[in-house]
Image (cartoon, rainbow, N blue to C red):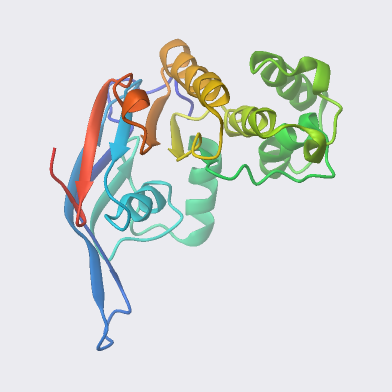
Length: 233
């Protein structure tokens, strides 16, 4: 299912989400305390809060990288907490894109090859369509002249733009961005943020954008404040 489908159903719905670590041990710790959240299609939401507040844990659960201890998580109307790992992997690969603070590119591969990786993972083989899709995305982020350049030879801002293109390779309904501008200079950060904002507006992609930058947060549709494992505003 793509960002253009099923527009009436929220892209994300969390109900009573709790997350504990070391369950059953003397040092068991609950880091998310009954979180409720609904994210509609096309919404661009900043997620803010102090370090250790549970922002990354929340993003990992929404991104199906970790399982909640309790509660319900729906992705485009599909309840996910009882899905097996194979089903979670398929849903994550086709529905969710990720951009992290560190780009996690394969330095020896070209920019184009890095963008193709999610498509290759889904298809199991390289196709002309996959190459064209990756090339279009590389052009979209302004890096067409560097498409054949190994990722390790690009600047930090260029690498993060490749990471944005890679996150969009499967046309996801949901994009999760965890401090994607944290390691960039002001200009590069503005370019990367602008790319994400444009994609959200043009494709109807929902975005959760974790940031400590209040200036960028103010440019989002709304701001979600996370404090001590709870959404407080």
